[in-house]
Length: 390
Image (cartoon, rainbow, N blue to C red; front, side, top):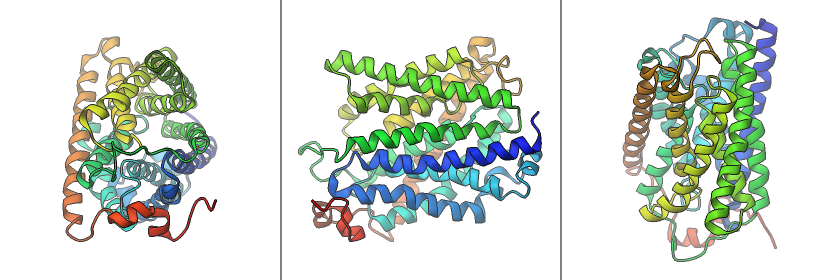
């Protein structure tokens, strides 16, 4: 066990790193849209951070965790506001990711209203189920840093939102060229660094677990980057920088539920699986099914989070973390079973909850801008500004 001073210090560092993830998402997404929508796309993750931080501080912490925060962590944080900032930032990351599925056509005010309701209707119940005293936690399900709570919920919700709102005008008929890929590359780098903040989830266990999770995150990201690049190279004859960094993000997503429970070798295997699997969904399954998930939130986070949850049930080992469990490959089939149950539950709650929310809110406010605004660009129409003046 670590001392209270060490726990407090690392929680401060972890919370800071997690906050860095939000501008990372903003830049990653902002560089991949058309130049007439760049400011709107960047604004959505920042709005998510502001909105959810207030909402979480007022209502979220006790609801999601049932008032049963680990006592050692609560004491290390002195009063609890620091825990609220940390957990609230995780919730904001989930909502910021959802935005990527519907950028370039969603009305800014509608997204804020949807986000406010989505945190309460989808994210908080799922957090309680897995990280509080909910039924999935009681079954023994493992989700170290949000494979289901953050990534499946965001990815599936983004897919539902994109499908209900409909595709961008001209999708599949006109070329939609990214405005600034170096922005996206820098944003992914911020996300990569910020991801190490998720190791704060292991504070109540030991610094050994924190260190192991740190290593697992790094190895999964690099393995997935190489896997994506290799598949792309084989398929298209040339590897792209965007592909490599997209693979790294897929690896970060997939290791989220497993980071504190798996060995370095297992982390590499998880990363390779996520790089190849997410590449295939983004580049082939999406085209076959025809949905317009603008920035591939489902292909990266929904699919990556699903693989990560399942892989946790395969590769988890008590030799790595005695407070966890052994997975199927270590002689405990039950853990694999409960990971599947949790994955299915997350899909159902995120998909069904988001669909109901959208249908209800659409009675109050139109979800997307009109054709004129979409042609003009959301920067001017929604915010009265331009990202580029030249």
